[in-house]
Length: 269
Image (cartoon, rainbow, N blue to C red; front, side, top):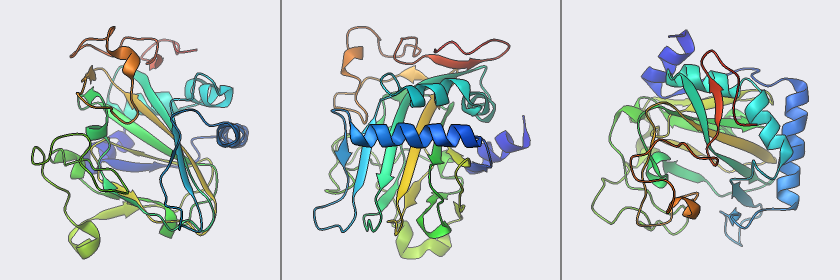
Protein backbone atom coordinates (compact mmCIF):
# COMPACT_ATOMS: atom_id res chain seq x y z
CA UNK A 1 0.00 0.00 0.00
CA UNK A 2 1.42 3.39 -0.97
CA UNK A 3 1.43 6.32 1.46
CA UNK A 4 -1.26 7.98 -0.65
CA UNK A 5 -3.54 4.93 -0.66
CA UNK A 6 -3.08 4.59 3.09
CA UNK A 7 -4.13 8.21 3.57
CA UNK A 8 -7.06 7.67 1.20
CA UNK A 9 -8.19 4.66 3.25
CA UNK A 10 -8.01 6.68 6.47
CA UNK A 11 -9.44 10.05 5.38
CA UNK A 12 -11.51 9.23 2.29
CA UNK A 13 -9.95 12.09 0.28
CA UNK A 14 -6.45 13.02 -0.92
CA UNK A 15 -4.86 15.54 -3.27
CA UNK A 16 -2.67 14.47 -6.21
CA UNK A 17 -0.41 17.22 -7.52
CA UNK A 18 0.55 17.39 -11.20
CA UNK A 19 -1.12 14.12 -12.17
CA UNK A 20 -1.79 15.63 -15.61
CA UNK A 21 0.86 17.29 -17.76
CA UNK A 22 0.42 20.51 -19.72
CA UNK A 23 -0.72 18.79 -22.92
CA UNK A 24 -3.29 16.78 -21.00
CA UNK A 25 -4.62 19.91 -19.31
CA UNK A 26 -4.99 21.57 -22.71
CA UNK A 27 -6.79 18.46 -23.98
CA UNK A 28 -9.11 18.54 -20.97
CA UNK A 29 -10.02 22.18 -21.59
CA UNK A 30 -10.74 21.41 -25.23
CA UNK A 31 -13.01 18.52 -24.22
CA UNK A 32 -14.93 20.53 -21.61
CA UNK A 33 -15.43 23.42 -24.03
CA UNK A 34 -16.71 20.99 -26.67
CA UNK A 35 -19.06 19.49 -24.07
CA UNK A 36 -20.40 22.95 -23.12
CA UNK A 37 -20.89 23.88 -26.77
CA UNK A 38 -22.78 20.66 -27.53
CA UNK A 39 -24.18 19.13 -24.34
CA UNK A 40 -25.82 15.72 -24.19
CA UNK A 41 -29.47 15.06 -23.39
CA UNK A 42 -28.34 14.38 -19.80
CA UNK A 43 -27.21 17.99 -19.20
CA UNK A 44 -28.53 19.70 -16.05
CA UNK A 45 -28.55 23.30 -14.91
CA UNK A 46 -28.03 23.09 -11.15
CA UNK A 47 -28.54 26.79 -10.39
CA UNK A 48 -31.66 28.93 -10.42
CA UNK A 49 -32.59 31.65 -12.92
CA UNK A 50 -31.88 34.32 -10.31
CA UNK A 51 -28.23 33.23 -9.99
CA UNK A 52 -25.87 35.75 -11.64
CA UNK A 53 -23.73 32.83 -12.81
CA UNK A 54 -24.66 29.34 -13.95
CA UNK A 55 -23.85 25.86 -12.70
CA UNK A 56 -24.06 23.25 -15.47
CA UNK A 57 -23.42 19.51 -15.27
CA UNK A 58 -23.29 16.80 -17.93
CA UNK A 59 -22.68 13.05 -17.68
CA UNK A 60 -21.53 10.01 -19.65
CA UNK A 61 -19.83 11.74 -22.56
CA UNK A 62 -16.58 9.77 -22.87
CA UNK A 63 -17.81 7.84 -25.91
CA UNK A 64 -18.57 10.97 -27.95
CA UNK A 65 -15.89 13.43 -26.77
CA UNK A 66 -12.48 12.11 -27.84
CA UNK A 67 -10.55 14.31 -25.40
CA UNK A 68 -12.37 12.73 -22.48
CA UNK A 69 -11.70 9.24 -23.79
CA UNK A 70 -8.01 9.96 -24.32
CA UNK A 71 -7.65 11.41 -20.84
CA UNK A 72 -9.37 8.47 -19.15
CA UNK A 73 -7.45 5.75 -20.94
CA UNK A 74 -4.04 7.31 -21.63
CA UNK A 75 -3.28 9.36 -18.51
CA UNK A 76 -2.09 8.21 -15.08
CA UNK A 77 -5.61 8.45 -13.63
CA UNK A 78 -6.65 4.82 -13.93
CA UNK A 79 -3.42 3.45 -12.48
CA UNK A 80 -3.68 5.93 -9.60
CA UNK A 81 -7.28 4.82 -9.08
CA UNK A 82 -6.26 1.17 -8.77
CA UNK A 83 -3.60 2.11 -6.22
CA UNK A 84 -6.00 4.20 -4.13
CA UNK A 85 -8.68 1.49 -4.21
CA UNK A 86 -6.14 -1.28 -3.59
CA UNK A 87 -7.67 -3.10 -6.54
CA UNK A 88 -6.10 -5.18 -9.31
CA UNK A 89 -8.28 -3.35 -11.84
CA UNK A 90 -9.69 0.13 -12.37
CA UNK A 91 -12.92 0.08 -14.34
CA UNK A 92 -14.52 3.29 -15.62
CA UNK A 93 -18.00 3.85 -14.24
CA UNK A 94 -18.79 7.29 -15.68
CA UNK A 95 -17.53 10.77 -16.43
CA UNK A 96 -19.10 13.98 -15.12
CA UNK A 97 -18.47 17.57 -16.23
CA UNK A 98 -19.20 20.36 -13.73
CA UNK A 99 -18.81 24.02 -14.69
CA UNK A 100 -19.60 27.02 -12.52
CA UNK A 101 -19.48 30.15 -14.60
CA UNK A 102 -18.02 33.34 -13.10
CA UNK A 103 -20.22 34.78 -10.39
CA UNK A 104 -22.13 31.58 -9.64
CA UNK A 105 -23.61 31.74 -6.14
CA UNK A 106 -25.10 28.24 -6.05
CA UNK A 107 -23.40 25.96 -3.54
CA UNK A 108 -22.95 22.29 -4.12
CA UNK A 109 -24.56 21.06 -0.88
CA UNK A 110 -22.97 18.49 1.40
CA UNK A 111 -23.68 14.98 0.16
CA UNK A 112 -22.28 11.52 -0.50
CA UNK A 113 -22.17 10.22 -4.08
CA UNK A 114 -22.66 6.47 -3.77
CA UNK A 115 -26.35 6.61 -2.71
CA UNK A 116 -27.14 8.33 -6.04
CA UNK A 117 -25.42 5.55 -8.03
CA UNK A 118 -26.14 1.97 -9.07
CA UNK A 119 -23.03 0.72 -7.25
CA UNK A 120 -22.51 -1.64 -4.33
CA UNK A 121 -19.02 -2.32 -2.96
CA UNK A 122 -16.26 -0.46 -1.17
CA UNK A 123 -13.60 -0.21 -3.90
CA UNK A 124 -14.32 3.04 -5.69
CA UNK A 125 -12.78 6.44 -6.28
CA UNK A 126 -13.79 9.72 -7.92
CA UNK A 127 -11.32 12.22 -9.34
CA UNK A 128 -12.23 15.93 -9.36
CA UNK A 129 -9.95 17.57 -11.90
CA UNK A 130 -9.96 21.35 -12.47
CA UNK A 131 -9.21 22.91 -15.84
CA UNK A 132 -8.90 26.33 -14.16
CA UNK A 133 -7.09 27.46 -10.99
CA UNK A 134 -9.26 26.85 -7.92
CA UNK A 135 -8.72 29.02 -4.83
CA UNK A 136 -9.26 27.43 -1.44
CA UNK A 137 -12.60 29.20 -0.94
CA UNK A 138 -14.06 27.68 -4.13
CA UNK A 139 -12.56 24.20 -3.90
CA UNK A 140 -14.25 20.91 -3.10
CA UNK A 141 -14.28 20.21 0.64
CA UNK A 142 -14.53 16.87 2.45
CA UNK A 143 -15.42 15.62 5.91
CA UNK A 144 -12.47 13.38 6.75
CA UNK A 145 -13.36 9.77 7.68
CA UNK A 146 -17.04 10.19 6.73
CA UNK A 147 -16.64 7.38 4.16
CA UNK A 148 -16.33 5.00 7.13
CA UNK A 149 -19.84 5.83 8.32
CA UNK A 150 -23.31 4.93 7.07
CA UNK A 151 -25.04 5.81 3.83
CA UNK A 152 -27.00 9.05 4.27
CA UNK A 153 -30.18 10.22 2.53
CA UNK A 154 -29.53 11.55 -0.99
CA UNK A 155 -31.69 14.53 -1.90
CA UNK A 156 -32.09 16.68 -5.00
CA UNK A 157 -29.69 19.59 -4.70
CA UNK A 158 -32.17 22.41 -5.23
CA UNK A 159 -35.58 21.09 -4.11
CA UNK A 160 -34.13 18.90 -1.32
CA UNK A 161 -36.46 16.05 -2.28
CA UNK A 162 -35.80 12.39 -1.52
CA UNK A 163 -36.10 11.22 -5.13
CA UNK A 164 -33.97 8.13 -4.54
CA UNK A 165 -34.38 6.18 -1.31
CA UNK A 166 -37.83 6.57 0.34
CA UNK A 167 -38.10 9.02 3.24
CA UNK A 168 -37.00 7.47 6.52
CA UNK A 169 -34.98 4.61 5.05
CA UNK A 170 -31.63 6.40 5.53
CA UNK A 171 -30.54 8.93 8.13
CA UNK A 172 -30.37 12.56 7.07
CA UNK A 173 -27.07 14.41 6.74
CA UNK A 174 -25.90 16.45 9.71
CA UNK A 175 -25.89 20.24 9.30
CA UNK A 176 -22.16 20.56 8.73
CA UNK A 177 -22.19 24.29 7.95
CA UNK A 178 -23.93 25.02 11.26
CA UNK A 179 -20.91 23.79 13.22
CA UNK A 180 -17.90 23.29 10.97
CA UNK A 181 -15.55 23.13 13.96
CA UNK A 182 -17.03 19.75 14.96
CA UNK A 183 -15.70 18.18 11.76
CA UNK A 184 -12.23 17.71 10.29
CA UNK A 185 -12.76 19.40 6.95
CA UNK A 186 -10.24 18.88 4.16
CA UNK A 187 -9.77 21.07 1.10
CA UNK A 188 -6.96 22.25 -1.13
CA UNK A 189 -6.30 25.13 -3.50
CA UNK A 190 -5.69 23.51 -6.89
CA UNK A 191 -3.91 24.30 -10.12
CA UNK A 192 -4.67 22.76 -13.52
CA UNK A 193 -2.90 19.40 -13.54
CA UNK A 194 -3.84 18.69 -9.91
CA UNK A 195 -6.74 16.48 -8.85
CA UNK A 196 -8.47 15.46 -5.68
CA UNK A 197 -9.52 11.85 -5.23
CA UNK A 198 -12.30 10.80 -2.88
CA UNK A 199 -14.36 7.78 -1.91
CA UNK A 200 -17.96 7.81 -3.13
CA UNK A 201 -19.18 7.81 0.50
CA UNK A 202 -17.05 10.76 1.62
CA UNK A 203 -19.21 13.77 2.45
CA UNK A 204 -18.25 16.67 0.20
CA UNK A 205 -19.41 20.14 -0.81
CA UNK A 206 -18.25 23.31 -2.52
CA UNK A 207 -19.17 26.98 -2.53
CA UNK A 208 -20.07 29.13 -5.50
CA UNK A 209 -17.29 30.57 -7.61
CA UNK A 210 -16.31 34.17 -8.36
CA UNK A 211 -14.24 32.98 -11.32
CA UNK A 212 -15.05 30.46 -14.01
CA UNK A 213 -14.52 26.95 -12.64
CA UNK A 214 -14.42 24.12 -15.19
CA UNK A 215 -14.05 20.66 -13.63
CA UNK A 216 -13.99 17.15 -15.05
CA UNK A 217 -14.74 14.23 -12.76
CA UNK A 218 -14.03 10.56 -13.50
CA UNK A 219 -15.48 7.73 -11.41
CA UNK A 220 -13.70 4.38 -11.22
CA UNK A 221 -14.72 1.14 -9.50
CA UNK A 222 -12.57 -1.78 -8.40
CA UNK A 223 -12.69 -5.54 -8.04
CA UNK A 224 -15.52 -5.71 -5.49
CA UNK A 225 -17.96 -3.34 -7.26
CA UNK A 226 -21.31 -4.83 -8.18
CA UNK A 227 -24.32 -3.62 -10.12
CA UNK A 228 -27.11 -2.44 -7.80
CA UNK A 229 -30.25 -1.77 -9.88
CA UNK A 230 -32.65 0.71 -8.28
CA UNK A 231 -36.39 1.20 -8.61
CA UNK A 232 -35.73 4.84 -9.51
CA UNK A 233 -33.48 6.71 -11.94
CA UNK A 234 -29.95 6.92 -10.61
CA UNK A 235 -27.67 9.90 -11.28
CA UNK A 236 -26.51 9.31 -13.91
CA UNK A 237 -29.04 6.78 -15.10
CA UNK A 238 -28.19 3.63 -17.09
CA UNK A 239 -31.58 2.50 -18.45
CA UNK A 240 -29.93 0.27 -21.05
CA UNK A 241 -28.62 -2.05 -18.31
CA UNK A 242 -32.05 -3.33 -17.26
CA UNK A 243 -32.01 -6.27 -19.65
CA UNK A 244 -28.32 -7.11 -19.73
CA UNK A 245 -26.69 -6.72 -16.30
CA UNK A 246 -28.38 -8.49 -13.37
CA UNK A 247 -28.29 -7.36 -9.78
CA UNK A 248 -25.06 -8.35 -8.03
CA UNK A 249 -23.12 -8.76 -11.28
CA UNK A 250 -19.68 -7.27 -11.81
CA UNK A 251 -19.68 -4.27 -14.15
CA UNK A 252 -18.59 -6.45 -17.06
CA UNK A 253 -20.21 -4.45 -19.85
CA UNK A 254 -18.94 -2.21 -22.67
CA UNK A 255 -20.35 0.80 -20.83
CA UNK A 256 -17.80 0.18 -18.06
CA UNK A 257 -14.48 -0.66 -19.71
CA UNK A 258 -11.41 -1.66 -17.73
CA UNK A 259 -9.02 1.29 -17.95
CA UNK A 260 -6.12 -0.32 -16.06
CA UNK A 261 -5.28 -3.81 -14.95
CA UNK A 262 -2.40 -5.09 -12.86
CA UNK A 263 0.38 -6.36 -15.07
CA UNK A 264 -1.46 -5.59 -18.29
CA UNK A 265 -2.47 -2.91 -20.73
CA UNK A 266 -5.56 -0.70 -20.50
CA UNK A 267 -8.50 -2.44 -22.15
CA UNK A 268 -11.00 0.35 -22.67
CA UNK A 269 -9.84 2.00 -25.89
